[in-house]
Length: 168
Image (cartoon, rainbow, N blue to C red; front, side, top):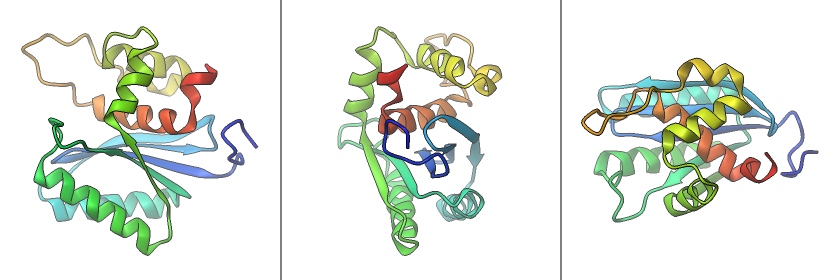
């Protein structure tokens, strides 16, 4: 068993839900990043189908999602519908869903001196070298968020849940 109380064979799937894409990170135990990526879709139903394929592929014992606050800029009807669908599909399969609030993520990672999500991404790439090539370049104010950032948001959700930020 690891410090988080999970055995090495247990798997976790963290999903960062966006209106037209899902960022995901799959872990075995608390130390091994199995896979990660961004899944694009045009309509919400296709997003649910893509999520189901991730469930089949990784067969997680837990799914971690971001809890969307009312005043969040992520509080879109499509995002909320996708999160409800993910929770429903997990419930049908008896897979526990863990919600991590945006406030928790902000407090845990900003309180440790990192100024932005790109610095978090660089830190996660130190923990998991296979992420290094996906770290986005520094963002200009007038640019949209980089297409790889949902991967790092999913990793942040998992690490927050697993308590890795404490032990590193």
